[in-house]
Image 1 (cartoon, rainbow, N blue to C red):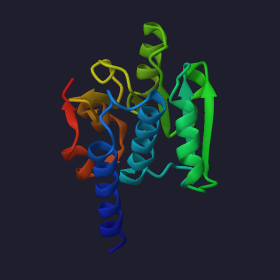
Image 2: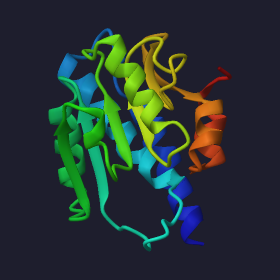
Image 3: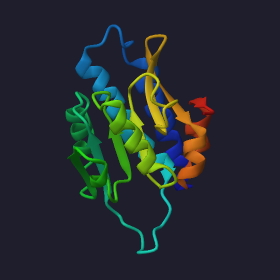
Image 4: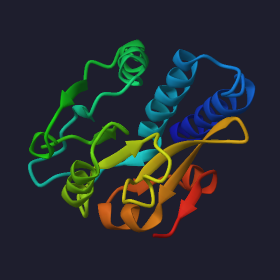
Length: 180
Protein backbone atom coordinates (compact mmCIF):
# COMPACT_ATOMS: atom_id res chain seq x y z
CA UNK A 1 0.00 0.00 0.00
CA UNK A 2 2.99 2.33 0.61
CA UNK A 3 3.97 2.08 -3.07
CA UNK A 4 0.51 3.34 -4.10
CA UNK A 5 1.06 6.40 -1.94
CA UNK A 6 4.43 7.03 -3.59
CA UNK A 7 2.93 6.59 -7.04
CA UNK A 8 0.22 9.13 -6.29
CA UNK A 9 2.74 11.59 -4.83
CA UNK A 10 5.02 11.17 -7.82
CA UNK A 11 2.20 11.68 -10.31
CA UNK A 12 1.02 14.78 -8.49
CA UNK A 13 4.57 16.09 -8.27
CA UNK A 14 5.22 15.56 -11.97
CA UNK A 15 1.86 17.07 -12.86
CA UNK A 16 2.58 20.08 -10.72
CA UNK A 17 6.12 20.53 -11.93
CA UNK A 18 5.52 19.97 -15.63
CA UNK A 19 2.04 21.28 -16.31
CA UNK A 20 0.86 23.70 -13.67
CA UNK A 21 4.04 25.69 -13.20
CA UNK A 22 4.63 28.45 -15.73
CA UNK A 23 6.11 27.46 -19.08
CA UNK A 24 9.88 27.72 -19.21
CA UNK A 25 9.91 30.77 -21.51
CA UNK A 26 7.90 32.70 -18.95
CA UNK A 27 9.74 31.56 -15.84
CA UNK A 28 13.01 32.97 -14.59
CA UNK A 29 16.17 30.92 -14.65
CA UNK A 30 15.92 30.35 -10.90
CA UNK A 31 12.42 28.91 -11.28
CA UNK A 32 13.50 26.64 -14.13
CA UNK A 33 16.41 25.36 -12.06
CA UNK A 34 14.12 24.73 -9.08
CA UNK A 35 11.75 22.76 -11.27
CA UNK A 36 14.60 20.65 -12.64
CA UNK A 37 16.00 20.10 -9.13
CA UNK A 38 12.49 19.07 -8.05
CA UNK A 39 12.42 16.54 -10.88
CA UNK A 40 15.75 15.11 -9.73
CA UNK A 41 14.47 14.75 -6.17
CA UNK A 42 11.30 13.02 -7.40
CA UNK A 43 13.32 10.70 -9.64
CA UNK A 44 15.10 9.31 -6.56
CA UNK A 45 11.80 7.93 -5.26
CA UNK A 46 11.24 5.86 -8.38
CA UNK A 47 14.66 4.39 -8.98
CA UNK A 48 15.97 1.37 -7.13
CA UNK A 49 19.72 0.98 -6.75
CA UNK A 50 21.07 -2.55 -6.38
CA UNK A 51 22.30 -3.59 -2.95
CA UNK A 52 26.08 -3.62 -3.00
CA UNK A 53 28.15 -6.55 -1.81
CA UNK A 54 29.19 -4.47 1.22
CA UNK A 55 25.57 -4.05 2.29
CA UNK A 56 23.19 -1.28 1.47
CA UNK A 57 24.69 2.18 1.73
CA UNK A 58 21.91 4.41 2.95
CA UNK A 59 23.65 7.64 1.96
CA UNK A 60 22.46 9.18 -1.29
CA UNK A 61 25.65 10.78 -2.61
CA UNK A 62 24.97 13.26 -5.38
CA UNK A 63 28.00 14.56 -7.25
CA UNK A 64 27.91 17.62 -9.46
CA UNK A 65 30.64 17.74 -12.08
CA UNK A 66 31.30 21.01 -13.84
CA UNK A 67 29.98 24.45 -13.05
CA UNK A 68 26.22 24.50 -13.07
CA UNK A 69 23.63 27.12 -12.25
CA UNK A 70 21.29 24.34 -11.09
CA UNK A 71 23.53 23.41 -8.15
CA UNK A 72 22.01 25.89 -5.63
CA UNK A 73 18.54 24.64 -6.55
CA UNK A 74 19.59 21.01 -6.04
CA UNK A 75 21.01 21.90 -2.62
CA UNK A 76 17.84 23.84 -1.76
CA UNK A 77 15.40 21.09 -2.82
CA UNK A 78 17.30 18.26 -1.15
CA UNK A 79 17.87 20.45 1.93
CA UNK A 80 14.11 20.85 2.30
CA UNK A 81 13.60 17.09 2.34
CA UNK A 82 15.21 17.00 5.79
CA UNK A 83 16.93 13.77 4.81
CA UNK A 84 20.28 13.63 6.61
CA UNK A 85 21.33 10.76 4.36
CA UNK A 86 21.84 12.98 1.32
CA UNK A 87 25.32 14.24 0.55
CA UNK A 88 25.88 16.74 -2.28
CA UNK A 89 29.45 17.29 -3.42
CA UNK A 90 31.17 19.16 -6.21
CA UNK A 91 33.73 17.17 -8.13
CA UNK A 92 36.13 18.07 -10.90
CA UNK A 93 37.46 14.67 -11.97
CA UNK A 94 35.88 11.38 -12.93
CA UNK A 95 37.85 9.52 -10.24
CA UNK A 96 35.93 11.48 -7.60
CA UNK A 97 32.60 9.92 -8.60
CA UNK A 98 33.37 6.93 -6.36
CA UNK A 99 30.21 5.75 -4.62
CA UNK A 100 27.94 8.46 -6.00
CA UNK A 101 24.44 7.27 -6.80
CA UNK A 102 23.66 10.34 -8.90
CA UNK A 103 26.05 12.41 -10.99
CA UNK A 104 24.72 15.68 -12.37
CA UNK A 105 26.71 16.53 -15.49
CA UNK A 106 26.94 20.21 -16.37
CA UNK A 107 27.00 21.43 -19.93
CA UNK A 108 30.22 23.28 -19.06
CA UNK A 109 32.23 20.06 -19.31
CA UNK A 110 34.49 19.74 -22.29
CA UNK A 111 33.59 16.85 -24.57
CA UNK A 112 36.58 14.75 -23.46
CA UNK A 113 35.56 14.92 -19.79
CA UNK A 114 31.94 14.16 -20.76
CA UNK A 115 33.14 11.03 -22.57
CA UNK A 116 35.17 10.03 -19.49
CA UNK A 117 32.11 10.38 -17.24
CA UNK A 118 29.98 8.31 -19.63
CA UNK A 119 32.70 5.64 -19.88
CA UNK A 120 33.19 5.54 -16.09
CA UNK A 121 29.46 5.21 -15.37
CA UNK A 122 28.82 2.61 -18.10
CA UNK A 123 27.57 -0.60 -16.53
CA UNK A 124 27.57 0.85 -13.01
CA UNK A 125 24.55 1.68 -10.83
CA UNK A 126 25.10 5.41 -11.30
CA UNK A 127 22.28 7.63 -12.51
CA UNK A 128 23.88 10.28 -14.70
CA UNK A 129 21.63 13.30 -15.17
CA UNK A 130 21.99 16.45 -17.24
CA UNK A 131 19.93 19.25 -18.67
CA UNK A 132 21.86 19.72 -21.87
CA UNK A 133 20.47 19.12 -25.33
CA UNK A 134 21.86 15.98 -26.94
CA UNK A 135 23.48 14.55 -23.79
CA UNK A 136 21.21 11.50 -23.67
CA UNK A 137 22.43 10.55 -27.14
CA UNK A 138 26.00 10.92 -25.84
CA UNK A 139 25.42 8.35 -23.08
CA UNK A 140 23.88 10.26 -20.18
CA UNK A 141 21.12 8.15 -18.58
CA UNK A 142 18.55 10.89 -17.93
CA UNK A 143 18.39 14.31 -19.55
CA UNK A 144 15.95 17.13 -18.83
CA UNK A 145 14.95 19.12 -21.90
CA UNK A 146 12.52 21.87 -22.79
CA UNK A 147 9.74 20.66 -25.11
CA UNK A 148 6.85 22.95 -26.03
CA UNK A 149 7.91 25.33 -23.24
CA UNK A 150 7.77 22.61 -20.55
CA UNK A 151 10.45 20.65 -18.77
CA UNK A 152 10.42 17.06 -20.00
CA UNK A 153 12.95 14.29 -19.61
CA UNK A 154 14.64 11.77 -21.83
CA UNK A 155 15.91 8.36 -20.72
CA UNK A 156 18.61 6.50 -22.59
CA UNK A 157 17.21 2.94 -22.48
CA UNK A 158 20.49 1.26 -23.41
CA UNK A 159 22.37 3.06 -20.62
CA UNK A 160 19.57 2.23 -18.15
CA UNK A 161 19.63 -1.46 -19.07
CA UNK A 162 23.42 -1.65 -18.56
CA UNK A 163 23.35 0.26 -15.25
CA UNK A 164 21.56 -2.31 -13.12
CA UNK A 165 19.18 0.38 -11.88
CA UNK A 166 15.50 -0.49 -11.71
CA UNK A 167 13.31 2.36 -12.83
CA UNK A 168 9.59 2.60 -12.18
CA UNK A 169 7.35 2.16 -15.19
CA UNK A 170 5.83 5.53 -14.26
CA UNK A 171 9.11 7.23 -15.10
CA UNK A 172 9.62 5.21 -18.24
CA UNK A 173 6.08 5.71 -19.51
CA UNK A 174 6.26 9.49 -19.20
CA UNK A 175 9.78 9.82 -20.62
CA UNK A 176 11.06 10.43 -24.10
CA UNK A 177 12.92 7.16 -24.71
CA UNK A 178 16.26 7.34 -26.48
CA UNK A 179 17.38 4.02 -27.97
CA UNK A 180 21.07 4.81 -28.64
